Image 1 (cartoon, rainbow, N blue to C red):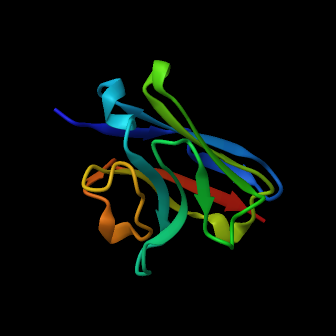
Image 2: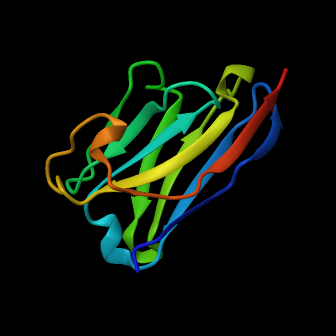
Length: 125
C-alpha cells in the first residue's frame, strides 16, 4: 500500500527553523515527482517546492531561498528544510507524489495523486 507520513511539525518562535520529513512506505514511491504544499484552513492549498526524478528542485518564488526540498531514497524520506519562519508560515504541511508525471513534474497541487495526512506547523510571533 502506498503511504506517505509527514512528521517534524510543531510550535516554534518566529525566526526559528524546522525540518519536515515525509516517510514513504517503500523507497520506490519517492522515485517520482514529489512535492510539499501547505494549507491554512479555509484557504487554497499553496505550492511550496517540488523535486523530480533528476533531483532538480523547483520552488514557488515566494519560498525560494528560505525553503529547501531534498530526498534520501535510502531512508525512503522526503524533506523540507524551512528557515526564518514567521507567523504567516503557520499552516498544515503536506507531502505528495505524482505518479502520472514521474519524470516531468507538473506544478500545481491538482497534479498530485498521493498525499500524506499532513503535519501542523505553528509559528508564534
